[in-house]
Image (cartoon, rainbow, N blue to C red):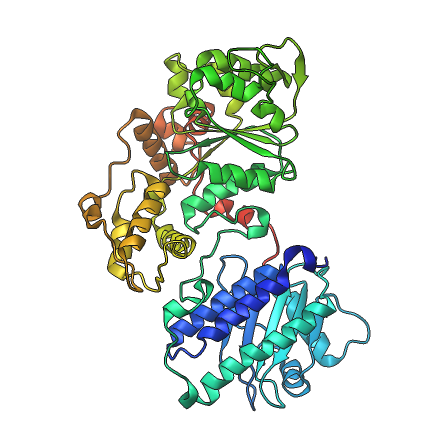
Length: 538
């Protein structure tokens, strides 16, 4: 695999990341320096499309590597540095003295020198496919090794990329050299307001899965979110209808975009319709289009959302609010793949994937006669429950920093610190409005904060910090009870003493209720789906 440098604009991103780091590398604060380095490594690694980017300090003498900085695309942890001297002593010695870049592939070839063969073995054992090692430093000897690792051994390192990384690597090494070798030359910290936004000290936000797989806007690493993403990964390559279940503000549209981008229709349009935002008299025209003269004001023919989404995906948000008469027409499109524009008798064929979303209990709506049972079963092929924010409190710090990074430039703010008590208040709040409410609260705090520290304007959040009841609706109570029994039984449904027997239900009835309520297993059994590629561990 060769990186398309012109298409990805890697050179501009690399230059900007290094420039931002160099602008702030004189800071005497080690935590600030590490934050800048982590951000630089992340941005360069993502620009080059690699899976890990590591900066390892080479010793002047002796076998020990003193320190290193590392970024990897996945959120997993690692326990040791990459290509440390105790794993590849001969290679480290060559890098320190010869200053020549080294390209490695995990596949062994006849005639490899001992240092290269040793390094390839280490790369292969660690799960990497291809690596580039660029020695950098001030003076005749290299002080650092810049290591880039791709999971695939088909990754090709272009000569232009190697040369550019050597050049910018000298800037990085120079900044570190001044700090490590001549601390008396370190100047006072550069005022944060004078730095580029991207160079200001903010913890890097880690996504739960690689951005190249279509989940780049979904922030968090909590168990509840991982379970939802595991289900999303399972169905992404299928063409099945997906029903997203979750409270308002849980990010259903983000999930729909991620599912579309990850799936086989990603090259075709994603068209969204909010069924609750349109008057009933206009929904049919919006979905199916209309002919000229079909009604007053229809002066020209118009394509509907189904036509616009042909070969792509149609996202029907708040589908539970669709009027009953239109539910029958939607059912026909799902069953037959055809429809007529308003005012036309000509049938048109269409090929779309449907993603529905609702905060309503559609099973209850069917029982109350407010939603067609046949349409419900057509939509409920693969339900995914999106957890509310109160079930993923561990993700709140990452979400807060993500919002800060997105909004502070437009608001002319320069936040570098979120006090622990502010973060604790945010994590204890019940968040009835979920992520949308969190965005509003953080933006208000940004407007209110005039310094580098985030000041929470909504101090009254503490009034609502107590944990709410599991659910006040019958659906919420039922879901909480079934999930509790399943956890107690280790998610075993069949057999004596397991969930179905304890609940007094037939196993198939329990499975139906789980599907209807959007209950998914929240444990490590789904985690392998979150790592679709080979992760490189040093």
